[in-house]
Image 1 (cartoon, one colour):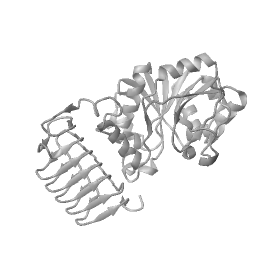
Image 2 (cartoon, one colour):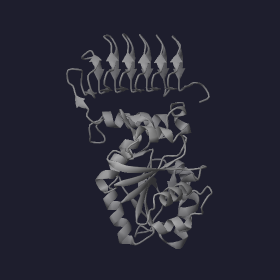
Image 3 (cartoon, rainbow, N blue to C red):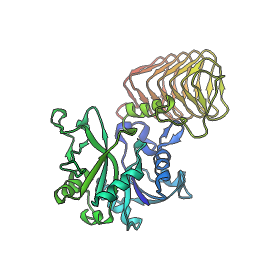
Image 4 (cartoon, rainbow, N blue to C red):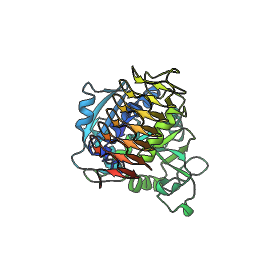
Length: 363
């Protein structure tokens, strides 16, 4: 089966990290997000994916020059202009010659969905499109999808007020589509699958949906990006936090590493240390990912945070629930809190205190 993977967005909510790297190429516990997404599709029979690219396409082309991502053969469809969700699906599917039932996934959603079951449901109902649904506490930021007893979608309500949402089941960003759906999408202009295509399918009675309690996370915000790491570190996905990671009790309780590291035992807990990283004596790392080649100097504290590869936290600095970009430096005695995000190669001057900040500012 073929899949269309939507990876063309600019990832504005994750700036400044996405100023230099497309969102789906950002690592989630030392593995690029796109590899985690395709790695979940491969066991369900997806053997070919077309990546619908827009923003910084060269990042994908350079990273996977052999055209294989997580064991799935990939082709690239680079949009000449932004086409929105449905427009991007049509452009990529036509580019890849899709002529049979296919899957569409958002490249920034991490999920443990049973795709086999969703495809079976789709075929049993005989519709032209099926949406995977997931329950959320607050559906107001999503597309809400009420259904009848058979699973036929009765409405598609994009981002309703919380007190007006008819259900807490929302569009999970995974679809099973028949190729005939492509004929319903106008060519060469922006078309929203949520605001145009799906409502039209509701009118014709050909849209179905199926809910699931499986793990699901839209990683598009810094808070969600941190949660994606924490869920893996704490075993909520039921797998090791990173490919090839091994637990090392000598380093501390619940500590994983992906290669040789220079770290002092008992100073690290519930964390993953990337190959070649350094955690100096007197430093404390808890509930965090210290990326490959990153450094945490003496007296520094890193908790509930992500240090991307090559980052450096200088002596006596504190990083709490924040993200430090690749190659960035947090100077001595700095304090980062409240989901502060530091961009790639940025230097935060010594003594700086940040709360919920983006560096550089305005990113």
